[in-house]
Image (tube, rainbow, N blue to C red):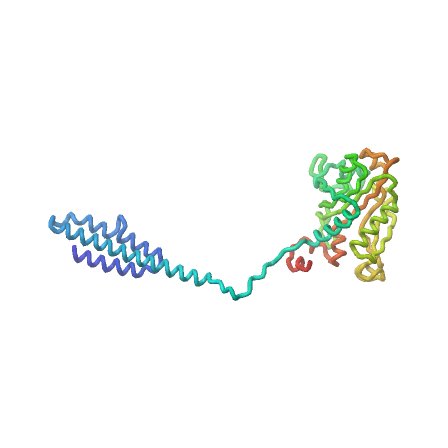
Length: 339
């Protein structure tokens, strides 16, 4: 039995020495010192010894157990210290190295253009008003003098959600909600997302943004509309910008017009940017139709007003000379970082 104990000690010390990882060391501990380990088996075999031999053998087993526990503990300590040294070495920070450059985000071109538009109109006394993107047919069409048989109500242009609801095709519906409140004068712009069933290309998208404007008060004329939009164009595109108005037709305004601005790239001389004409069309406008005022409970004999609508993406593309609207939504950091 003494020889077996010596042989077990040699094997145990050799296996502990070979345990170069915490897992291997734990395997050695369990194999020799565990409840089902070899030392426990040795103690159980003491019944084969005589009464005189048992105390000496039991003492020898316990001494070996203490020795192995001490050796394993020392190995674990060395291993932990080595791992800590390795970790400290790998995580060392050289304070003399230059710091890592942080990538700082910034506002999107659309957001920059919208902030500029809001700044201009708030400076003229306008209020920024929002409205729901899911709208009733009445507010999106009927209250804006768009009859049931109007082409704009065709399902090819409008996303219908069932029943009387749809995704708004224009933010003019927010103006109707504001007119129904009956608080006059009204001086507002309503920017927001709109939805139309368009194919995606360089100038079209089924989801884009509009900024609608409305002013209603006594004695408002087309001259007020022209002066307001001229100030907007000069503030947004530059002091030298000129404007001109061309007759047009919109169901909710009468008379109606489209407004062009002189090309800020060539100064009106004609270039690729303005297709040689010297002018760029940017928005539609007009005097609010009397029937639209009546449907919202406003007396057209007492009050008049004007409205206008401009595509946010359109003026963003023009201001920053971007040729493809899809670039605004692809989130390419190389493109966005230019702004």
